[in-house]
Every structure is written in structure tokens, then in C-alpha cells.
Length: 343
Image 1 (cartoon, rainbow, N blue to C red):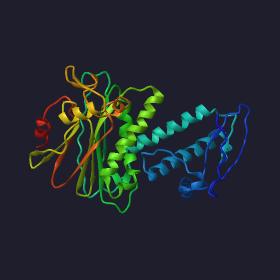
Image 2 (image 1 turned 30 degrees about the horizontal axis):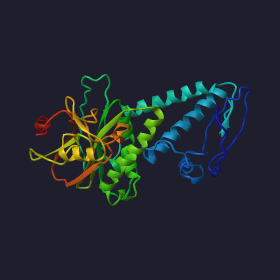
Image 3 (image 1 turned 135 degrees about the vertical axis):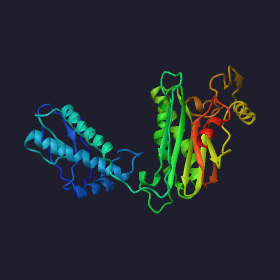
């Protein structure tokens, strides 16, 4: 059942009402034409928030496809179709309609996978290879993000070419890693200093992501967390931000270049910081914070406890002809195997 919502509609939409015996209601907003649909989405009086991690352009097309199919399917099913605000019909159940709509959406998306609309290739193209294993765990708790054309995703114009790559090493469950992989880059773009100081925007994005996930974890009784490492490329500048022991390796002319020092409780400075905050570092098969986690910084409820505050670090480096690898290396030493693989 839908609750009636009164919204000041722009002139490009038609509103109609009807009724049915069961009182089932289905809410749709239809523009008069396809050309006017973007106006409906962008008008302040009827703004619709759909998918924050997908660019405005794709939001419009996705909604357009949804609406056009709904109009077609309902008109066929009901013989008399109205461009409606509230649609009531005794001939079709809302659940059945939803199944029809999403079935068609799945069909359209499947066709797109086979013949996806071609987009102009960025001048600088980053070849990406990905390999992930869950090892002995029951479920894969890690996530990765690859956005080689950052500007297209967020519809950024008049900006240098940008790319975003991230790895999140979850613990205690996968929810924290999923949340960070979906929201961190969005939070970064929303920071005021993103245009002129992406490094600071990255740091704040880590903090905002942690604060919001901690709230989510409290509501849903989640006790998972995640470390993370992000590389953000703008033009010829490589920015690296990390939290915990996930690592980035840079290989230049066959030689490994140190970009970061992972946050581990066996580091003397990390141990002092944890103890100053009232925590402790003890040996239990490995050095662990408060006898539990073997990482000293993390996103999530566990990470917000004593000694594991979300304090991300960031570094930057000018890029030349380089190769880069990102990995979860919490239980390994220097990644000579990754270096050998890249060279």
C-alpha cells in the first residue's frame, strides 16, 4: 500500500486519479514525452533520489526505461491505460506488475551486457587485472572497486582525467566491506575540497564512511569491520589513502617503490597511540589490539572502539610509466611475488 504524497509537480507531468475495490495503490510519475523526462528528475520541486553511486545521466536513462516499459505493459494488460499519478486497477495485482516490470528490466540489462552502448575511451586507459580468493573462510569478506573513468560515473566536466581503485579487507562479516565499497568514493566526491584537495577529501571520506557505518551497525546489530586502501589518480598525480593493513605496491622500472606503511599493532608508534587511548596490544598468535583484532585501524563498530579510531593516512606521488598493485597483505611480508608478477 502506498501512502499518498503531495508534491508540487512541474508542468511536464500529467496527474490522474482512479480507485479499485481492494485499495491497492501503485505510484508512478509519467512525463508527457521522453524529452521532458529529464526535466522531471532535475526539477527541485519533484527531485527523486534513486542511486547515489550512479551518475545523473544513468539515473535518467534507468528511470526512463522503467517508466516506458511500465506504460507499455500496463496499456497491453488493461486495454485502457492512463498516464497516472496514482494507478488503481482491479485487473492486476501490484506484486504481479512488479514482477513483470523487473523481469523486463532484467531482460534489458542482460541485452546491455551483450551489446553495451559504446562510450569514448579515455585518453589514459588503465589495464586492470583482478584475482580474489576467500581462503579458508566460510564467505568472501573482501571487496574491490575499479572505476577507470571516474568523470563519466559522476558526470564531471572540465576536469582532468580521474580514476579510482580500492580494496577493502573485511573481518567479522562482509557488510562493512560492502558498505565502504559502495559509499566511500561517493562521500569523497561530496566533500567541498574535492576539486582542489583530493587528498583531504579522501581522508574525510574515510571518516564520514566510518561514522555512517557505525550508525548502521548499531541499528542492525552488526559487529564487522574492514580495512581499506584507495588509490585516486587525477592527471599525473597518484593519491593513496589507507586505513589498516591493506597495501598498495608501486613498481617502477622493475623496482618496488614504498608508498605507505600499513597500520599494524606491532608498529611501535601504533602501539603507543593505542595505549595512549586506553587500549592495549597483546600477543595471541599475532599482535592484537585488546587481544582481538590484528589490525590497529579499521572502519566499523570494532574499529571505533579504544585504540582503533578511523584515522586514515594519505600520500601522493607523481606518476610516470608505472605499474601498480593493490592487495590484502595482512598476513604476509614484503610482496615480492606481486612485484615479480608485475615485472
